[in-house]
Length: 365
Ligand code: PMP
Image 1: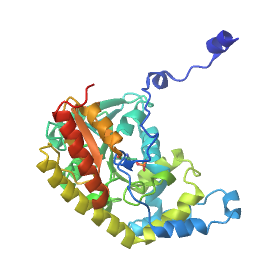
Image 2: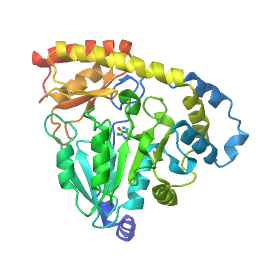
Image 3: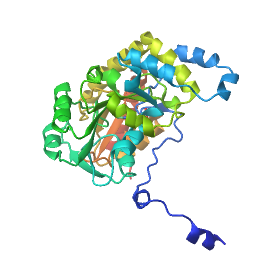
């Protein structure tokens, strides 16, 4: 019977069969979470109040996203038709690739970068053209320009980038948009608040530029799954064809409004992280750990051959960090999210103990 079931089980598309499995380590994360670049503390208290005000009756209805979309658009200085809310930026990436990438198209990606671009691209019939950064992990602008072809259909840039924390300048982004008019240029500003620079103000004036933002990072709403795409109406209408009108749930919509209004909380959290980042950089320098300059709420550090032991030792000390060794050009490198100053002081104690153990050969593989 089992055999009969196996032989008759329907096969997915060839591209799906060829996709790699991706299981981010989301289990057992009750320690200090410096592994996923989330807000490490809490969202605005106004969000809690908003949640408490939700009636059971309101949950019986399908969510109505348009009024909140209009509010978010106004907050960004845009028209409602230029903004689409999504179930996290991950859905935004998925929908954008579904809408624009077809067979023989090329997705141009500076690497290392955020994993999900490649995951969603691999579900389409397009080809990924990866352009690797040099050892300094700076944005490979010149190499990207050279890699543009008539088949380049989407260029995805995380700005700031993960795991490096490096940035592309406004001039570089606008030049890329100019040099590849046949392509959608996605600028993923997931970590915008920690960087402070944006190209959101050019949305609508650059015909092929789309900006993504998330509420998972500075706003502290990763569990609600909220993101957005902002772009010219001519492109957004195609995005909306593919995007589910139901994918952002009503609790997320209620909370989004509250989170946006509490600018004081956002400013406080970002200020705290930036102060913690400066302190943590000094601690890394004092410990003799190589680091890459970061404009985001995380720092990539060089641990070397014993990176897996380092991550294990940190976990044993109650601090979760993320091994990025399997990213292109990142062997031996670990990404550490920046939380509050108090949290990062705890992280520094764990880091120094782990390094001492590694340097004295305390733990073996
Ligand atoms: N873009 C980048 C560059 C990210 O690092 C992440 C989160 N790790 C995301 C998008 C995903 O954001 P969301 O939680 O909104 O799906």
